[in-house]
Length: 355
Ligand SMILES: *Cc1c(COP(=O)(O)O)cnc(C)c1O
Image 1 (cartoon, rainbow, N blue to C red):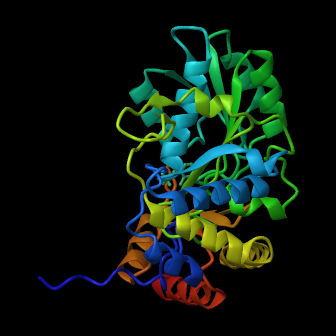
Image 2 (image 1 turned 60 degrees about the vertical axis):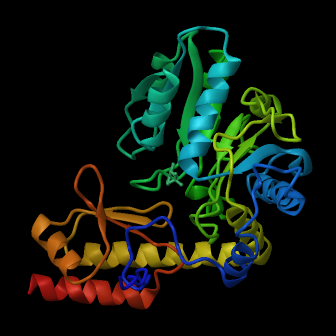
Image 3 (image 1 turned 45 degrees about the horizontal axis):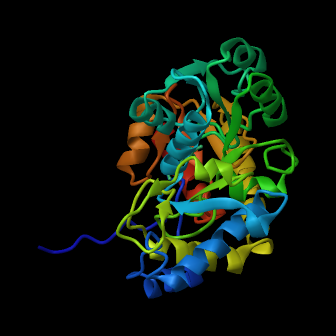
C-alpha cells in the first residue's frame, strides 16, 4: 500500500496542534526508544522530564519551579482526568462531585464517567466565561474539585480564576485550571490564570498545543506534591516503588520534544508567536466583520464567526480544514503555522464563494 502523506499545515485552521519546532522534532527522534514510565532504566529521559516540569512550572508562575510537582502526560485529557482523580482521592466524602463550567473540555465528561464522580455543569455568561454565582450555587460539602478554564476550546475565554479559587476553597474543594491550550499564550497577557495569580491547586498545560512540541506531550502541574501522592500506586516489578501517571509506558519522544521546544522558545519565541497569532486573529475578526459576518470578538487567538452551512461546506470543499463550535459557528484557531497569507487566501476563497 502506498503510504499517505501527512496533511500539510497550509490550510489547517481547525487544529490546536501545530508544526513542531525543528529542535523539538530532532530531540523527539533521538528519544524515540525511551520510556519515562520506567525512570530507573531510562535515566536520561527521566531527568529530561524533571526539566520539562520545571519549565512548565516557570511558565505557569509556580512559586518554586525547581520542585514543582507534575509530569508530562499524553495530553490535556490525561491531565484533566488525573486532576479529577487526585481531587477525588483527597476528599473525605464517598460520593464526590466536580463543578465544571459548560465551556469545559469534554475530557471532564470522560473523567466523571471513569472515576464515578458526579459532574455538575454550570452555565457561562454572555462573554462565555464561567458564572461565579452559578459555581457558588453548585458547590457543596461533597465538591472535591472546581474547574476553571484558561483558554476555552471553543471561544478562547479565560474564566475568573481567582474568584473560582475562593469559591472552591471556601467549600473545602480544590481548584483546577485547564490551560491546555492557553498556557503558552497567557504568560504574555494580563489575564489572571496561574499559580502566581491565585491559589490554584492543579493545572493542565500542553506543550503539544501552542508549545510547538510534537504529539504526545501534555502537562499536569500541582502546587503541592500531595496532589501527585494521591495518584501513586505501587509498582512491584519496577525499580521505582510507585507511579503517579495514568499510562505506564510513556513517550520519551514527547518529553524530549517538549523540553527542546521550551528551551528554544521560552520566553521570546513564545512571546513572538503569541503576538503574531493575536494580530492574525484580530485581523481575521475585523476582516470578517467588515463583510457583514457576525464575529465573536477574540480574546485569545481563536475566532468564531456565524457562517451559513453552505459556505462552511464550500470552504471545506476548497481544502480548508475548518471546524465548528457547538452552536455551529465557524471556528478558526490562529496557531503558529497559520500565517497572514493563509488567512488572506482563506478570505479570498470566502469572497469567491459568496459571489
Ligand atoms: C485540547 C484541550 C484539552 C484536551 O487535550 P488533548 O491533548 O487533546 O487530550 C483539554 N482542555 C482544553 C481547554 C483543550 O483545549
